[in-house]
Length: 397
Image (cartoon, rainbow, N blue to C red; front, side, top):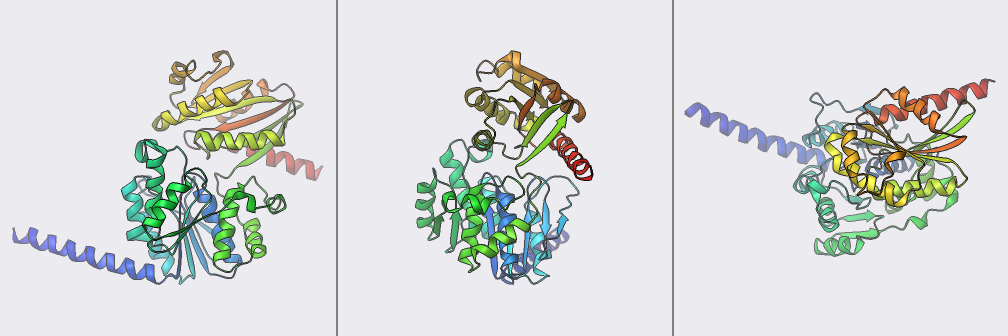
């Protein structure tokens, strides 16, 4: 009994020591930026870190997106290794311990929690931000944060910094954000995406979202970094693996433009991506929606089916991933024309590529939505690699 009591006391004392050490680590980093939101967290984390580096601040960043990374003061990236392959918020403590040893001026860290109580812990016990960012509030992770958009928004607001300042590009849920921020004595500032001009967007080598750039510029301005320097840093930064990209591929006399929107995996964001791309390429083309399904996110696949059936004029839907046969039970409810669906399930990535080419008449727009996991990223990489190879051949020829 005495041994158990002594071990219990030792564990308690160790926990107290470890918590105190973490608080010292946190206080050693002057600028701490915590990025939360439904969509765009990884991209905004990278953009803000790039603006700070360009502004002369020694900045470290950590993303928790498609491929989690630590980004150092030179913009070099290191993968975050997870022995169990299961994300755990304790990871943030270890990353902050690593970052503080390099004595940075600033740290930009993406919130990796989904459950409301864990989001609160991430901010108020782990990060203790001086600046908060909430990119937006969308109907996603409803099982953990829902069921309503009010619930989702209140959950995201758990990462507001005590007595600090926060920035957001959210429009619809901003009144609730402002109400809660006022109650918590946090100054929250709404940043309109219209503050970013078309000319500013032309410097990106990929399809970045205007609202992401707007928030990053607002944070830079708050830290007395000029828009010119901030944009220069953003243009030179490496995008997240889940960044919106388009790959142009030619095969058998046909032209295919593949839009990788797999990271924008809620219906509202996916539709926004499609509307943006469709305006750019409004000519007569074959429209193919590639829906990648994950078994543990099947409810999201149903939501995406509803969005496709009600808002996209498509010629074909290619269904890949896990449990695709179950989608057929929802076609009628989701206003999906079953005769236009090609169910490929868990198939070889090259088979998906060749099916796309076969379905294309002359030119095609391929909208890939759903999830990066369960083979989605691998399919996108097939189109990416072929596009790069063709570009290389065209330059050498």
